[in-house]
Image (tube, rainbow, N blue to C red; front, side):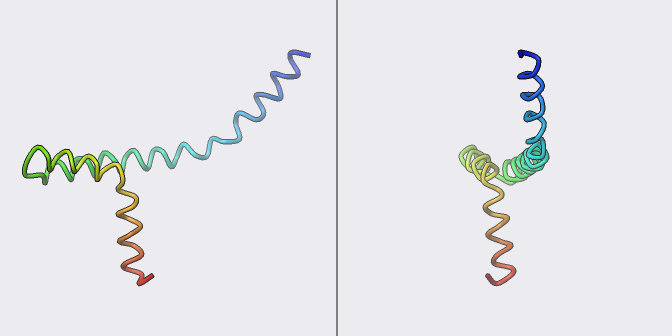
Length: 71
């Protein structure tokens, strides 16, 4: 009985592996945008603001894409 439960548990574990790629893209985008924002900062607080902007960079990307498309 215990082996049967383990087999069924292992079958369901591999189904959600597609989300890992999105996390990698977000992570690389975060690093790139953090480096950009911090390197262009004029002071300490501008660098802190750059880190905060780097966290939400997908929102800036979508906003600019919608603005470009005229939506």
